[in-house]
Length: 224
Length: 258
Image (cartoon, rainbow over all chains, first blue to last red; front, side, top):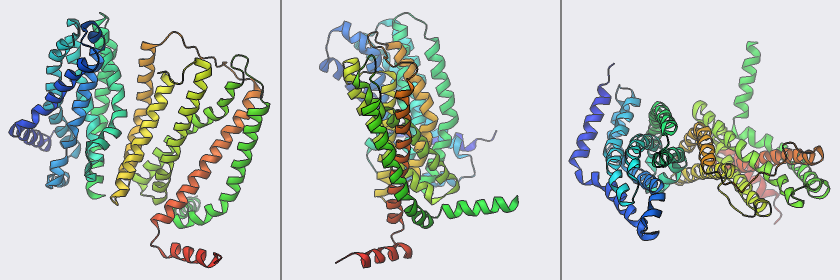
């Protein structure tokens, strides 16, 4: 299959991410800081913390991924690159997919890798580390895919991220439910097979639909 | 056969013209409002005054006559909004765009009424205004989905852009509604509190059901009436620079007693 567009965008966006290294750390620092707020606001008691840890880690990771969505298409839209990408004789679906994958690689992936460390700080039991990482790896990919639709829809509005958050969060709810449930099940020593299967199904579905809807939304944003 | 198809196509195109819709709906509106008014008045008096008391809940169950029709139309309204949004995107029919824009706030208010009456009903039956029950939570999420569409619409129209993006969002919402509902169900069975039992009887007594049916019909009529009223306002706003709207405004001016 001829996928020059996909590979070119993948390469370009990864290169851009590496060049602007400073932005890479922002979601991670956000994740870290908000997790540090939790013991301050609730309780430093490790037993109570360990009970709320799966949900808190998941909600915070979700917010970190959400806040970084804003820039997904913004710069390319502002300097006209996006319009050039759209008129390329290449399937827009794959090019949008490439941009979304890069978004996941620079936010979701590091968040998932950092999560066990923060889990440790919230005294999450050790049995939860791997399922937390696994659920976040799959979950943040779904979040990036769904979020790309919202980012494309709000693109011409020049609004701050709050509008984007409002329209995207309801769609994030299923991912949060299954993701945090997976960690809770693992901590309780139960099988994580069923939420894992559902998360896989959600990932497959959003892989199929999201880039397509995002392409439609991008065309709408540019051509009206 | 070909002729029939052609004439029906012509009819659709005629219907889809905002001006024609404005004129014809002006003739429907008085009858529709009358029907709405009559059915809701009958339903309310019958339901609140004459329907028998519930064996377990006494009189407090009577809020069902507002709660159920409102929740019903809140859901139906989302699909009406999303389908007309799809029509607006695919066939670029202006009127469908107007339907979609007008349907969003009506649907959101009905969802809000459903949530509010549910809370008022919950206090005497469950002893609390709010519980994180699967159905209540799904309704709350539906409310958020409506709000998202409205907020996006407002943002677009503030910048003079068309609200196709809101239509697209509504469409994505329809794909997601079953997923969200299923996931909320799953979440609820995991955290199910043991103390709450649904006191609803599996089947309703006909004496209680008949007024409910009338209320549901009344709410449907109300929905259509409200939709038409706000669509007419939207049409006038969008076509404000056309000659027929100017004529309309001038005629109104002449008729107004000074």
